[in-house]
Length: 255
Ligand code: HEC
Image 1 (cartoon, rainbow, N blue to C red):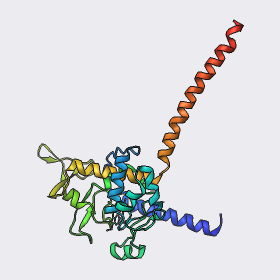
Image 2 (image 1 turned 120 degrees about the vertical axis):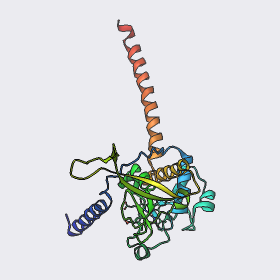
Image 3 (image 1 turned 90 degrees about the vertical axis):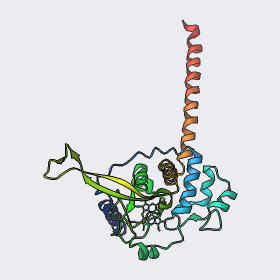
Image 4 (image 1 turned 180 degrees about the vertical axis):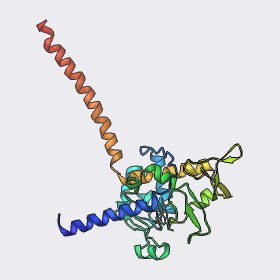
């Protein structure tokens, strides 16, 4: 291994460890995202939410706007409705914010989200985008149950509304339940402070579509691969039949 590649490897490992150390401490339960990357309407809705609510800070630098044609959008639709940070569809979906600005404004530069779904998983993203709550003690005024003290504010708050996180001891027969280690079992629940423009069901669907889009963006060729897989299966079935008939006709005269 060359010296450069050792440095790159060490940096990558440190980054990965750092991200996990900061984000993996809570035992917050992940919820199933249930995304369907073959549902084009869902992917298109996710793309819309992404450019409207995320692109201001996060890019998808590994993807070009033109790639959105493979989820069923025309170049016209892309240009008219989705292209805010470029003037040619062949350009990458980059954010207008520089890493330096991001670091100045939020303390941490918002990472590029091209492969975030592969790094975190769909369920993590789905849970993360649904567990923001009001917290007066953080610089942004927001906190996150899954990713405590995250530098990102709740950018979808106008849709979900504002919520507080209440943590209490779990009571049984009027007494706190022991956790077996000298402490008590705590339970957390969200309480609505102000409703958003969407119902909980609508909000969950919007987030699911957004996560589906990020899963697709992490591996845009998966759609083509699924389709190819189906044709390969058909071809195999036909081949099995052909072989069978060939076998039959070959042995017919020999019995
Ligand atoms: C106002 C700027 C801003 C906007 C808009 C924004 N984010 Fe973020 N985001 C951040 C910052 C800053 C961080 C880094 C937080 C940290 O590491 O503490 C972040 C972190 C994240 C992470 C965690 C990355 C990791 O460490 O694994 C995800 C996922 C994410 N954002 C998704 C989104 C999505 C999806 C949207 C659109 C709905 C969005 N963000 C909109 C600023 C923003």
